[in-house]
Amino acid sequence: MTYEAVIGLEIHAQLQTATKIFCGCSTAFGAPPNANVCPVCLGFPGVLPVLNRAAVDLAIKASLALGCRVNETSVFARKNYFYPDLPKGYQISQYEQPIASAGLVEFAGPDGPRRVQITRVHMEEDAGKSLHEGFADSDRKTYLDYNRAGTPLVEIVTEPDLRSASDAAAFFEHLRSMLVWLGVNDGNMEEGSLRCDANVSVRPVGTTTLGTKAEVKNLNSFRFLQKALEYEIERQIDVLHEGGRVKQETRLFDSATGHTVSMRSKEEAHDYRYFPDPDLPALIVGAARVDAVRASMPELPDARRRRFVAQYGLPDYDAAQLTQTRAMSEFFEAAVAAGAGPKAASNWMMGEMARLLKDGGKDINGSPVTPAQLAGLVALIDKGTISGAIAKGVFETMMATGRDADAIVAAEGLTQIDDEGQILGIIADVIAKNPDAVATYRSGKTATFGFLVGQAMKAAAGKANPKRVNELLKRALETA
Ligand code: ADP
Ligand code: ZN
Ligand code: MG
Image 1 (spheres, protein in one colour):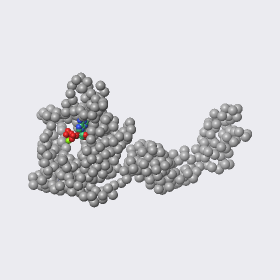
Image 2: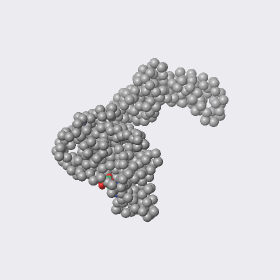
Image 3: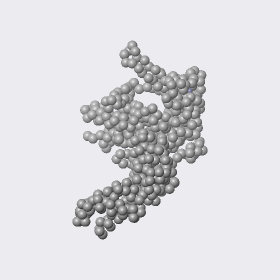
Image 4: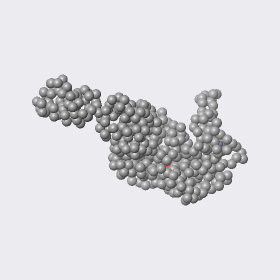
């Protein structure tokens, strides 16, 4: 019997607002513990939550990008449970009436295009953070930091449409880049801004009923998601092969061993006793507001990728690379607007620029070279002022100093040698100094031609126009 995996994801994404969802406290990461708290996010008696408008707009943005219907009425509910990082004794979330439903996302999986339906998007507040210290009973301590309590989140729930660990990881990656592109989420997975719970079951290939699922909680990297799912799929198939039954349970991934371990079974699952929060009125989002949010959204990566192919004649590969981040796609268009040929701009960005940025530990936002400066370099090559080989060195200097290409070329005397007389002089010298290679060429073994070109370029310190050197050297060798 062969089995297939069935996977659905629940992704928590922090909304990039300046303040929390129900109070005015800052959401800045890295403040001293309990610096960003107030009676509302600490759950003092008698306080009242006030919904953050900016958080709602970001949730709408995410929902639209996921192809969802934004519901006119959604309701905040209390999800009741006790934990020290949840001082109110309940989390404000949405339950039966979420802000958005019924979306569809198309993305490129490692083995081809894939589609995942989105069940719903709901808004909620994050809990605080517990920090545990010590292992022995006598010195075990727990510290509580409520800075994160009340940070706005969206939870994105997918239908069980994914069929492999690698597709699930690719989907999560796609989602991250889309949310970052939109400015909805900062994409910082180490800081917990984006995390994923993976639900997975297996079933015999060809059947359609769902198997019993396990949920693996709190995966905060693409690799961990993939590894956890690979392990879990194997484990469940082994259980079935041995004639056993998969138990419905919540599991945790141990990144040290690559295994998932049981955390709690279905019987121990919470009954959250959801009910509408009496302190918050229903959230009404009219069509005009949805339209206004839609109008404020940037072109999405897929649309931009297709446009780059159509408008600039770029190969699919280039267009896909250049639209990996919004900043990169904007840099490219600015360089083209400043006069660079699209393919030339793309080649520089994907090649030398990417390499030097990486070496310098920078991303494109920190590039010392501006789009206009890149266009300036491309113009010097197009005009024949410098050769492609010299341009590489010039670009390195530009990246190191932020200076313009023509200033560097002038200061360092790098202008290309095009003058026929000058090039002929160099060639005569090379012919005189390499009689053996010349004789070999003239005897019909033309393989030494490349060597002689190399000698001429070397003698010209790389500045001679390589096309002219080729032509004139060939003529000199064949006519003498
Ligand atoms: P629960 O009631 O346990 O929260 P839901 O039906 O709300 O389960 O689904 C939660 C997530 O689990 C969704 O992403 C959904 O697609 C996924 N899911 C549900 N059933 C299965 C299953 N049998 N196998 C894999 N994933 C599933
Ligand atoms: Zn507060
Ligand atoms: Mg559920």
